[in-house]
Amino acid sequence: MSHKPPLDPRLTEQRNPATTDIDRLSALEIVRVINDEDHRIAPAVAAQLEQVARAVELAEAALRAGGRLIYFGAGTSGRLGVLDATEMPPTYGTDPRIVQGLIAGGPDALIRAVEGAEDNREDAGRVVDEMEIGPDDFAFGIAASGSTPWVHGALTRAKQRGARTGFLLCTHPDDWMLAVYDVVIALLVGPEVVTGSTRMKAGTATKMVLNMISTGAMIRLGKVFGNLMVDLRATNLKLQDRSERILMETLDLDRQAALELLESAGGSVKMAMVMRWCRVDAAQAGEMLNRAGGRLGEILQGRPEAE
Image (cartoon, rainbow, N blue to C red; front, side, top):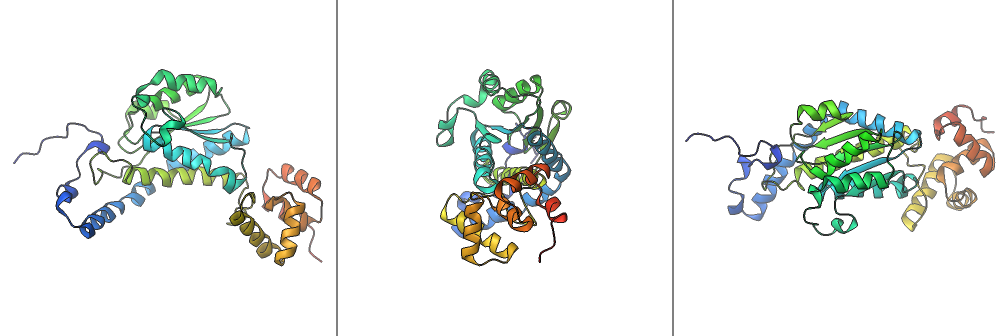
């Protein structure tokens, strides 16, 4: 029997030969097949690490310049962008405006499909204008299929306004994408277990890379010391406990002393560490952090020796 070429050349739309009989498998067999396919995700991400690192550098440059990292996506891709952005303030103490996720169709599209929203390039351009995206910003588009008009419309308008642009897809990029966008990340995870269901391998790979971009930028901005998230804010009991434990471990304090120090630092772990290390008050600690660009390591190198 001759093999016909796929009707759609995009990897995200091709049928997976390993799952053509998945509808006749037992529950255990189904999850084994899915797990086997998931093993393709990490190698696909590994093949694009240089491009991911470039995206980290662009995000860092934007944030250092007082700009923003802004994700644009539709459907699952958009939801993953919103998720990544939403997790930045509690994890790294950032202003919610610094990293944002925008989805075609607006907030309603987070919980239900908004028909036709992803096809509206004009709407995307209007959103970019309303946000006043400019040269200090990094606009990053996410579209597993590589073809979502709303995402390309947003990036096109952002580029016209002087922003740097990046694009993530899960199929082979067209040559024009490589020429137009500042960075293109192509995660070739292969056809999905259920044809076209890009919330699966493509979605997992996308989340991995968005985690890398935002986390990498935050580390470069000095929001991590060693491997501790020292810029978190104690906004709930879990984060309060984590904040106190970080101070107990790094400063050799008991729980009560850590709590009192954290309170005197306005709930900022990083501020508390500088106050203790350098024997200064909160205002002086803030000035020192500003001069060091938020990097605790630079302050640690010049701190007085403990008595």
